[in-house]
Length: 148
Image (cartoon, rainbow, N blue to C red; front, side, top):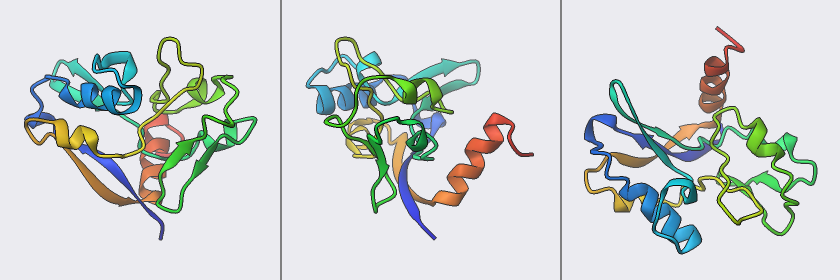
């Protein structure tokens, strides 16, 4: 079976510092503001913190009219900035709502499991883990109510 490395979040360890967001935006955009420049979003809810991030389900791949999205042999779903026309179809379609857009950037972006956020987290709230692709698709479909 095919596997992919995704981010695992430990909410009980998160203090909301958003160092992971800052590291992501600094690595990919040379901008340390985090927030809308990051492919990771930390949100505070009633039960504490949660993380919104791409889990590489790949459902966005078929939505791209110019085939700018593809799955690498490692299982990671990536976007080719050279091929992308900026139509944002993947942003609107993403079942997790984690295909991102940044101000003044035409092409969308997403987590590529680079691990820089893991290194930046001061509390060990993030970890790169290897999972089966079939398991990811099942989780996404359950969240959408496609299957019981």
